[in-house]
Length: 303
Length: 313
Image: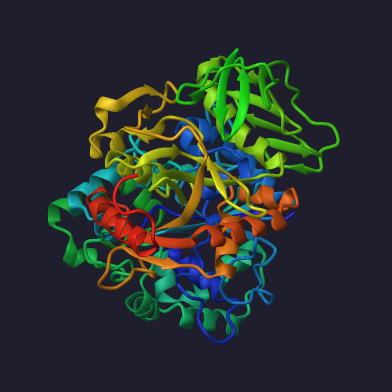
């Protein structure tokens, strides 16, 4: 038995950074490589993992049909049944990892139910908890536009669309399984308002202000040891400039092929929207998302 | 009954599958029988289980929830049963795809997850996980006159010594709507593979219905960081025996079955046979339709370099 802990986020909210911070909790000397964390089984929407685990080609299934199979697949891996293809994650030796009792699995899926009424991600039988990382949507929009090589307006439209999804084109086989986002507000509401799996929230802005403290609070909430020296070292090894330097040196496997700036680790700032967004776009995002933004305290200082 | 030649085996089936190679029934009993019947929900004495499958000795029970479940028995029979309101036509691809591929695994034979085309009368394989571009590359080469051999499964025989042969898995490509449009193959496009999918059978311009000797295996990779080759968008590199052995095992039709069925030795032997026949290469290229010409030019140059016949098969 090795339960999943979901690392959930809307895209461009710091999920990769959180994964690196967690991976670096076990690092001894060298930082964990940015290309060492992204194995197929560490991603809920991995098509390759689905195909290997189910013995079925997901490409022959509609999104609804593959969704119907996903809950049982997550419960099966959580139950820890023997799987000869399973290797421990690449990267630093995780023998001394305070998180080794869990499977950390990234997801951009909103918390939805399948056509047969099951939680897509398998409910409590699959996962012990979720870490939900959230970022000010006014900062997400510029990062998302860079990632998708789209305009800011298109990125804001996607965030405001309750039917938005990743990997949802039906005329081809997307590299990943379809992930329903439900828009920025819908995504967060789906996770926060479900009662199947406990959710531990961390704000990108708090990680940025004091990574050891925010990460420590997260681990404590999850019942994992939070050794201050370890937290400080993980934060140092995952500093944004270091990640950018690694990307400049070797590139980032998980980045999209066409990015506007050519960089996945773009700015890593908070509040960049003050320079990057027009008055109109800021107004649109606030109009689209103000109830959820208030829930996270993103409109407090402007009340 | 329908009669097909599939991966070198004579198959008698009450389930029709478009896109396969038709065969005469002949006097001898078929190698594989595919029949409708009652399929249990659990398999007694299962030694390995997944979320939707169970394995006991030489039998596998495989379920696609709401669509079909099947019992793959001893490497010579598949019993299938549709679930809910699924029609046999909509379930057939699972029986002939995963079901048949697992049957080959149970037969203790080597089956690669690969497409294949003919170059100079020999077979060239393209391997990679689902979505790696196997079918699209084979179809693009087919449109340039290279004969079609396989779309998804390549059974290798003769790996224990002598000539390694590749057996065809059907007579049609299986392509998504986008690929059909980009490769300008609308004229050759047939029915959808399943009613709800925008993926279609596409007739190849020419093809081989007979087994062909293996020439080379290419493992498909996408040209992206960190393995982006600087200055060169398409790169082909030869794997040494150790890396080839790993690549062949990881590109088995269902790699996890190699271990579950104790076939590590079989696939090592296959890798040695492949090295003897021509070798294993890694082909890294951009996964974009506008890079297809460049990819095919690099392959054609490589085929000349390794002594495969110049030009079209």
